[in-house]
Amino acid sequence: MADFHQDRIVTTLHDLYEAFDRESYLQNLETRLEAHAEHRNITLLLPSLYAELENPQVLEHIIETICGVNYLHRVVVALGGAPSEDQFRHAQEYFYRLRRADRDVKIVWVDGPRVQQVLNDIGSREIPTGVQGKGQSVWLALGYIFGKDDSDVVALHDCDIVTYDRILLGRLIEPTANPNNDFEFCKGYYARISPIDRQMKGRVTRILVTPLVDSLMDIMARWNHSELMRFFRYHRAFKYPLAGEFSFTTQLGRGINVAYDWGLEVATLSQVYDQLVPRQIAQIDLATNYEHKHQELSPEDMNRGLHRMVVDIAKFFLMYMRGHAVRMDDSFVDMMIHTYYQNAISFIRRYSYDAEVNNLQYNLYEEEAAVRHFRAFLWSAWEQSRGPHESTLIPSWNRVCYGFPEIYEHMLDAVEADNATAVNRDS
Image 1 (cartoon, rainbow, N blue to C red):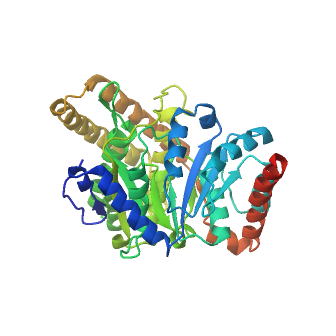
Image 2: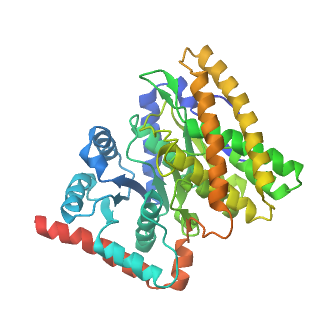
Image 3: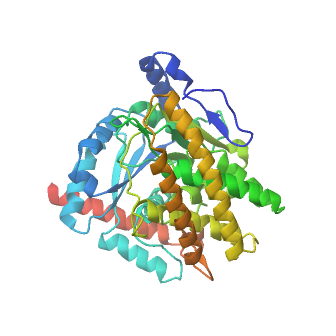
């Protein structure tokens, strides 16, 4: 979706290469990355559920694609949903195909007894470790990466990307791996159009986060909360704030708190906002179209699907505002929700025009119904966030090291022992 638009806050890196030959572009991109890799070690972090190995049509393509690149120093898989050792050994055999003489591969067995003992040891020092999920798995894998202390750049993406290719991977990494610029954090973005039913996807981004952040930015400006107005203006600058693909320097990553719920992506953007100046932040167009699994709306069950996602995201923003001296009560939240609703309805009209001119199917009724559900979910988020609550952020590894100086040694011992045990049994 190439254009030339640049926001004043975040540098946008467009997909202008689409006007030329993709193969020659890819060759040039990977040549540059291989040159960067001579001076900066690049690690790829893959959060994966064991269930994704049992339905390998998508994951198999991702693994084969990664096998073809030459610039990765290490691949670390954060394996969740694998309580048995047989499952871990199967995952190890599956992902170890990525191993080469110049590329290490390690599996962080999140459910394994050694890693669980590390979590218990951290918790015994009254340092919160969150609950099981993608956020905690990513955080644990980062602990192993930082403990190895030989990576300069980390890239992260999910294992359910149907439209995955080497250009997506290379473009995700290049901005932070390139020593000739100042970027310490790069967020991916893309269009999400279902090729099967020719519909816009990404509902939570399109009709929740974008209009909600837009509304909060205006509200904070009217209430003279200038710092929070700038905070929400920063979030509004991202084209796809809920994208799960980003890369960052390890120097930045060591100081980032990680959310363990569905607020992971917006919390990460907020952490980056607190630690970097704008010229160190970029977003990059990763793909002409992006497809992965879609979540159900789940209006009756707040523990599943988009219902849980919306509540977790909204709770993060509500608690962030409370933590920055915004006096919140029922009347404020009621005003906020009504402002969001009117803004979301106006966005829906724009999306319908966009769909029509691009010959896409667009169900205005379903979009408006989803916004009404989201409006109710926002109130649920407010009710859940009343009073004193613990943060859903797991402390940064810098913070953990302060209270547990030996933590990296413990983390390395656990992961290396898990991986070595299975190798020895197979040999």
